Length: 385
Ligand code: FES
Image (cartoon, rainbow, N blue to C red):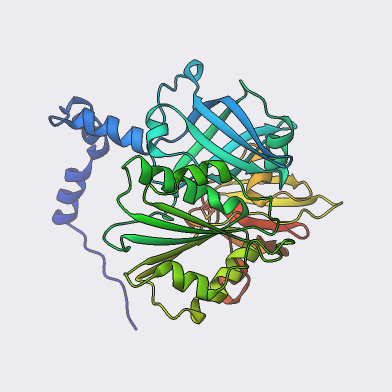
């Protein structure tokens, strides 16, 4: 039988005396330490690149369509924000606003360029779909103040991985990330050639068409497609159109849009005659059609504390926790980073479209509250940092 052996005697006493008071000594040493030369600048740069939070104010609102607006956000000087964090075209921000007294957040792709961020402006095009987006489109006004986390995300063109020719497939508001890239190409912040194939179910529903048309010829080419164009002036998008856009040179293929559109784009890939050097799918949005009626009771364990809270119809577990004042970890709020992973104890749930894999096998024992909706009373454990 294996038995653990414990050392006793002089050596152990010696070690104990070495460690005695070590925490206090470490604190003292840290407090009196000199920062290495340049350390403060490095710290300042790190804070600018990766802020815990940004405070912004709405500077301007542009109506794109009845159900869709562009919000231009600037730093909220009153909240101590003097500049905006830089970002890579294709990244997103998570915006938090108070909706009916509860904090609600959602990620949105930036449609503005890095140069505009340097001048103190972020642009987000938001379609009235889901609790927060509907609130923003229907009620937000110039002067409203919000908080942001991010920029985040790896739906970005990288010169080491991607080809200098980018073929981009967009549908609906999924064009936002590509508009940001196209602006960056024109402004010299992205050194690539881009062919954007933009498809929309309605011939007159293309977002940002005027800006996109204005970008044509500066390293950017835009072609429009419509699956069911009434006058036949636009063709539906198919694999042959993608091959034609790709041409003979190496290219990378990126796509972004609603979950249905993303699935349709992905069906084109096996039909291509050309072979993309790299593939990159957009980060989509975390959104489920809300279910009417019932709210549910959630028991949430966070270390030594257990909360009992209510989830309103159509709320993610994350939103319900935030509304109840529970500081749940959620850097991306988009089902991407895995940081909010929590342990299911009991209860049924559904996930936002695109995250169905999480309902299978071992994954089903774990939740990502940012993209999970309760289907009854639930109990789960979160891991706050
Ligand atoms: S916050 Fe990133 S996966 Fe949930």
